[in-house]
Image 1 (spheres, rainbow, N blue to C red):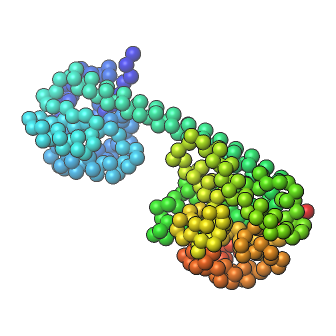
Image 2 (cartoon, rainbow, N blue to C red; image 1 turned 90 degrees about the horizontal axis):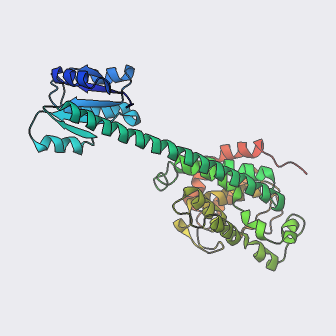
Image 3 (tube, rainbow, N blue to C red; image 1 turned 90 degrees about the vertical axis):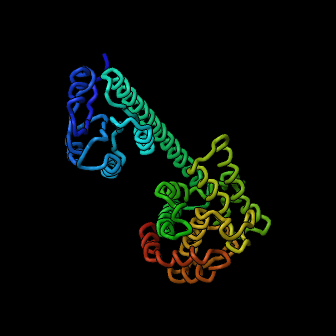
Length: 364
């Protein structure tokens, strides 16, 4: 048995549609209106599957009505069909230019009208079914990503030199700075809500490359000073992190989650002036995600007993106060960090200090 659809019809002369409705009553339930302006109010209370707009409506131009309806309904807009008694391909062309689903030439044939409307409704249902399937797939992918993050962060905590609180502070500082930077013209199209969500989840994974280093070296990071040769080995963690993500993302293209993962693991020790590692890239060639994680991590290491293999602090023993750490970051503006990045970090300094106090490193 065919599904019964509900149509909303707007025409200044409803007689023809009343006949069509009678003939196709088993297929369609039709609500007929004679004024175009009634449509907005009617559709807010009357659940329909589609709209038929006749070009003969008198109170408002039919093209204006379509535009107004879509502005009002937005993403909930129903499929629109246009009918006209004017024997002109120009009207049909205008209708399709506006993106309507179907065009009916009057006088109407009850059978053709029914078949066209059914075809439109079927297309809409298939599109809706596909969207639901896509949403389900995206949800499953999100779950896989989240499980991957949890697993890798857990492994990194067991083997890496950093504390759990360090990872919490890094992701919270990163998201605060990312939100601030999203207002800058350079980054407003890059740092979207989804980008921020992924950055928050992935920032703690920046040192995942430690997993591939020798366990002996990683364990000694907090206990004793390493030789220059050992420090150079430690610095390989950025390239190793890149390889881990590369293997995970093999044969996967155009995935923002994995793109950010590659950026934060590979480039979070690059410097604005090109003096960083592993590749020595500089300026805006350094992805903004990596720049954000770099400055967040450096601040956190300066103000806590954490280790970072960074050019500026690799032989540091002092723990800085919040204000002293900010002064260090200011001194690195234009060489290690982008001036814009440092300026925006200073603007969120009260938030950063609050995060630092909220998640202090626990003594083991």
